[in-house]
Image (cartoon, rainbow, N blue to C red; front, side):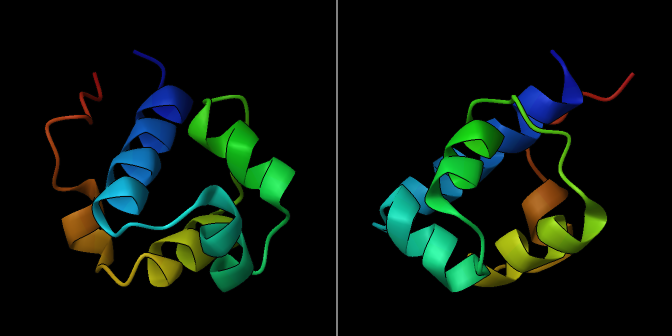
Length: 74
């Protein structure tokens, strides 16, 4: 699975677990809602600054974000 897709799946998983809409998460992360949609769909090569914003908006540590079975980097 492509890393962009893995990242988007993890964002969606955590967003839903926190009961946030895409719009609410995008607002917290200070990115556009359509950008968040494309991130979750694995269609964006997310800049490191935006990775940080999204993870911070999810109120999770970077370590916990990436500590998931979703990520299978080979």
